[in-house]
Length: 405
Length: 234
Ligand SMILES: Nc1ncnc2c1ncn2[C@@H]1O[C@H](COP(=O)(O)OP(=O)(O)OP(=O)(O)O)[C@@H](O)[C@H]1O
Ligand SMILES: [Mg+2]
Image (cartoon, rainbow over all chains, first blue to last red; front, top):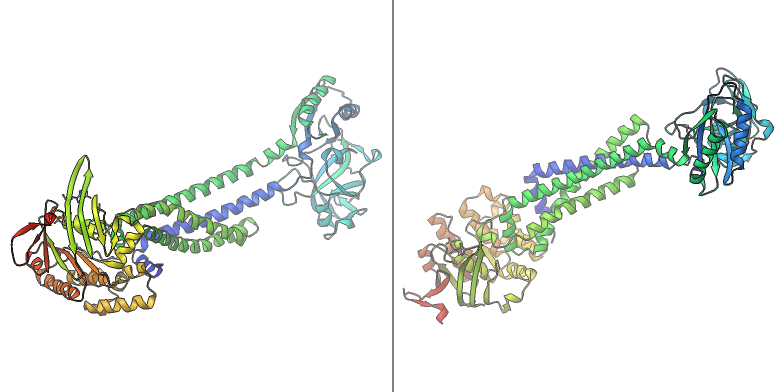
């Protein structure tokens, strides 16, 4: 026989403690749900594919200090050496690394003119092996050929006639229909025409927090710079062995430069999202601590109220309550308090979420997550109260005649 | 309806063993009204607690209404208390957060009666003790005598065969004590067996049988006489 009616009326006569715990549960739900939601957003960001074959790629930087160094022929020699190494799939010179945080961006527009709005894109200068070295998938069009590759001097502002862009960028430029982009002319620097000769499925920019991080373009140019980067893709499983081997080979073959920063794409991803990961860990800690505090709060209130009601419990036992009925009494009482907390918490969680969404332009909370949060807190309440309830159940019925034993 | 054979109870605390009851033998018939007197600490409450299944004896046999109590688990003992026994306590033991209606409701809910049956019984028994008009009041809004009347209504609401009272008038002034005693006599006249612990010899003498407990041993006082014979010897 449930005792909801009398229990509610009795609770109304001792509101304060119950209300404080309900508020604590509400606050916990509010923060918990939104923290999980923020973690999910971050996890979703981290889960996005970069488009690069991250498991099997690495890169290194090549810094020349020799005077009158033959930059062009040395690059050709280095790439040739690397490409000939058994286990290497492809290699290219590149100006920037996806996810690394540093790179070059430009605006592209479909009509020439100074006052036409452009769409931002990351620029990767690569050669014919760019697509193969990154491991990106060419959806339409064709790769650059040898004759497309031109040398670009350090201060040059000239652009080659061809460009390969990502599907997302193509959709943005051509009203959502990427297939329309192929063969079209886009304008860089407001006026310089480039023809879209290929579309790749996905390739992220160097900046993981940028709204348009899926906007990237491949440009067929080699840089005549004293500092440059080489990007290398190996056969599966051979990356780690080839990294030191290629580093040594390059370093030994030419003493007028140094090879530095040999790094895998896996590490780059890890570094790129280190802050995300740390924030998630902090949020997780906050959730755990908050839940524990709430749990102990419930234990505390239950212990206090059981102590206060020792004689009442003994009397109930004398009047015929079994141990299980006493236990159920306190579990049910907690369920009532927690339910109030959860109802208040739903309001709080939605309120905080509305604020977060409007302030930080996030997507709104899903009802599913809110429900899971509610269920989790009700469960925490029941778990927390089960020990005090067990103690209550063990109070002897003789307490009714003897007072506190 | 009640039969105790060689019931003993000892408490062991901090290497000291207290023999609260020694070899109690007692048979109660349906409709008996027994008073229990004795000096403080002699074992009266212990005796009543064992009779009411609030604690169990250390040794001996106890049959209540044809059931061997030692064979019952906690659930069985709770059910037995709920269905067959009513309790009245010296300090009333009303639940302070519940109004009179809800207080009388407590054992009825454990019994599993439906709402209509419970309401009928609560109203009837509160009316019997003259407090039907104060059903929504809290115990703290009543005098001691009124609180004890509510406790009696609560004890009777489940229609128990056996009523146990530990100093039911101990916290009441003498006129209130008299009215509570008359109430108990009426209840007994209606067939309920009563076992009542009291310090008041006047009240004790109004019972049909008198038991005197001293140092954990019980003796029955013959009616109208001051001679004592040891129950254990019967
Ligand atoms: N839980 C317990 N642990 C240890 N000793 C106990 C316990 N309960 C009762 N006693 C002891 O058992 C003896 C009998 O106690 P009991 O309460 O039955 O006496 P009583 O006759 O009801 O006394 P009073 O008239 O003062 O109520 C006492 O010596 C008491 O100290
Ligand atoms: Mg006593």
